Length: 425
Ligand SMILES: [Mg+2]
Image (cartoon, rainbow, N blue to C red; front, side, top):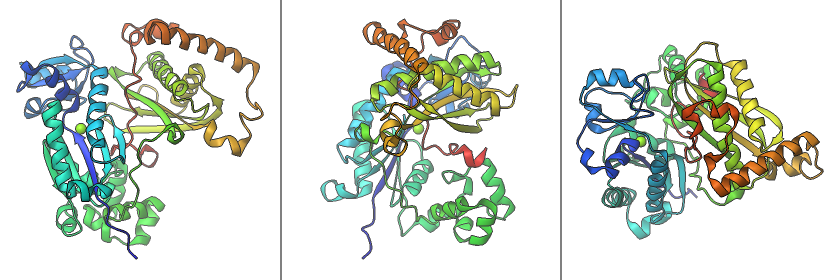
């Protein structure tokens, strides 16, 4: 018997950071506005732009200097990550009114499985409409929602019409809505894959859907087959709701740097800032130690790179930072600009305990580890009592911006197209 058709929504907040700033300061509504790290820093980059700023051709990640050339009246606003994290939570609470199956894909994007909610609230499109109206009325933000029968198409649909829009891709209309789109619109198709497919004469999603399987396999391996499944709308990956801590599989943070960085010492500093945050969250999550460190780097052309490595299990900031910096030095071309850095840890004790005996017999817990851990425990206690940024490492203290940085609310980027660098970079 065939399974009931799923109803998946993919919700993407429009110009999220800029929209939150406008919601907080209504006098800015209708003005061309950008959010940037430091408005006084002309070499800083655009983190987000308002709808009005978009009309001047201003793009995310271009320099503030170049944005100002396009629009001299541009309003520059400093970023406020705590507010964005707060709004993100408030939006998520709205989603939970309609389903408890909500996957947070990034700070401004969520996938929702509403299959079970249809009897209660109406069709997928009707639920999307209710959510759109709630978010607009209660928070003053707009959202683009894709409605489909699988996650990949729902995400694709959310990109088709912006802002403040709902797009449905159904089994009846997917050929006409999806097949003529460029293959690069498909999630997980980055520049390198696009180029490989182009060489095979595949330019559209429709062409990918009907391409010869052997050909795809030869060019891209198993991933070629997977992409074809996505193109055909046969993706059956479930929406993964965030539940209790037993389901925490990874913890990560990333940050876009105030300006592009090439200096390794500076990269190292930011890796410490990130590691502090990841390590603090790892502690709070109470999931034990992590045995895998994953580093993500984005360059000035917005290309993603990522590497990961196994380590002896740790919760220590020092270990995480050291390992991430080693990965960086080992793999990232010297002198190449860095725009974003991210660190994610996974392979927690409670996942691997039974497999490795680690943590049960105390294997790998050297005296040195215990000593460092006691020091970091003490820092964690002070921070809990007096505030996160009251104690900082020397390397972080050296930089004024890094010093006051608390990025625990900034999530790792998970479900974005450029991610999956392992295949593409
Ligand atoms: Mg968005």
